[in-house]
Image 1 (cartoon, rainbow, N blue to C red):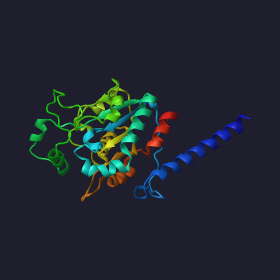
Image 2: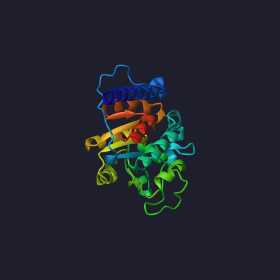
Image 3: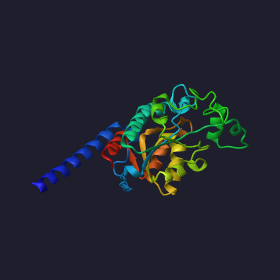
Image 4: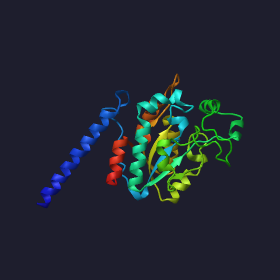
Length: 261
């Protein structure tokens, strides 16, 4: 009886896994679909909730709201990926699972606008004045500004438990305290989401990997710019397939959090 029950259990688990994979594939637009016959292996990343953190990059009005300064170049991708609702699901599931939740924000202060050189995306961000705050020592004018967090996420971010790291200034976490904060919590597995897919998200991914973390990118909880230079989301997706330990949908991630693995 035990053997039969065990066999039935394994069969049901296989059916459920296949159903989830089919459902996830059905949600992905054809132009972003994974290759039918991938050449690279699946690393098989598993979660251990005591060692796992959700890291959300730049969940701010300037990137994720139609009221934000960057909306003309990111709005199509944010909408296409259903980004804000998907991030809401990740926040909710992560809090319910009791894992570490952390934010890597982007802020520019007046002295940042005095830089003597910069790359194309940096110069563009300074030009349209996104993430601006009047002072590193004051929150004057912060509430409701483009630098503020999306209203949909505030109950999760401002609960007194979420780690809000110091700001990253270009793309990766090398200039903030995020890695230190995660290590101090015993984290070595990261669920990664946010913006921009081909800039800050990819830069965080690469740095985390170099620091020895396992990283799963949530493919429909990231979005990127679309400009004449190209589709930032599509370009990042290719690199995620090469280097991330896992590439999951929001629904797959929520299911894994609920199952604890």
